[in-house]
Amino acid sequence: MESSLPLLFAAVVGFSHAFEADHLVAVSNIVTKRNSLPLAIKDGIYWGLGHTSTILLIGLLMIVGKATFLNGYFGYLEAFVGLMLIALGCFRLYRYFYRINDGHQDFDHVNGHHLAYGVGLVHGLAGSGALILLVMTKIESTVESILYLIIFGLGSVLGMLIAAGIFNLPFSKRMSTHQNTHLFLILTSSVLCIGYGSYVVVENLI
Image (cartoon, rainbow, N blue to C red; front, side):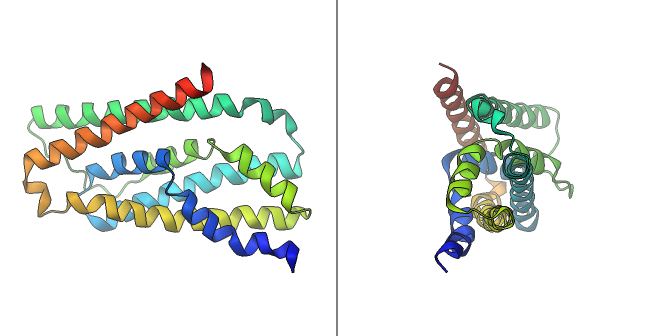
């Protein structure tokens, strides 16, 4: 019974993991291009699926393949996530001003979630090593370790779809008619993305 306790809490830990600062600044930036709540929620789901994909891949390498050589590289992977956040913030600003100056609407109505999935994939690199090492020390069974990561991932999907929905509320069709408010929120999310990404890079490389 005691050995199964980590599995019982995996979904809760995964759910709360979705609300970490670097995840929130990324998803808030992504959903600023949506004025459709269902599309924003799908972005959150795809982010969670991408995040889970990377964690499972690294987990299989470390737990099943015993790839302990990865341990020394997680600081660089964290820095790479920081660079991605900087790029995400800069790209959102470019996209907004380019489309507005070109006379196009800023919101994206296309049912494509490649960006959200890709950002989730990269985000899975941040902290995945510490998570998997923790699982390996708490759970001896390889099957249970992988099961923990899967349940953890499903919890993070649920957490991120809720976060994406909440962050998208200010960009509803009613609110999106207020151009100044729209611009302020985009600038805020982009600056937070760039600022936090810079902090992560400095923290892990300097």
